[in-house]
Image (cartoon, rainbow, N blue to C red; front, side, top):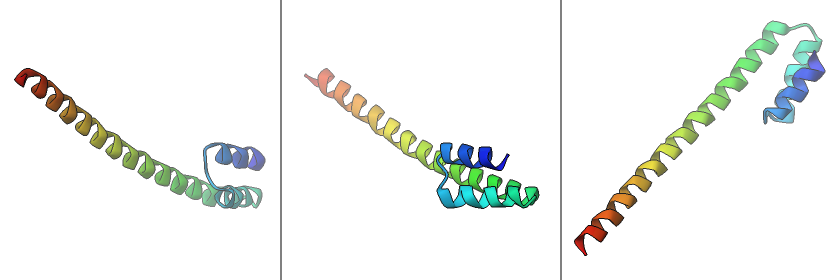
Length: 77
């Protein structure tokens, strides 16, 4: 299981150090510790996701504002 976990973590974009730490915990039978680390990694990824969503929301707002400005400019002509 530990090898699969490490490969999966690397595939999920986690760093080598984090993946190795989880692998070590699994190999030593410390599954509760491994679970904690996995949850911490997930929390970090979720925070990155939320930050990305805020950036997308900001860009969406700027796009809408720019489209309104273009429409208003065309209507004034």
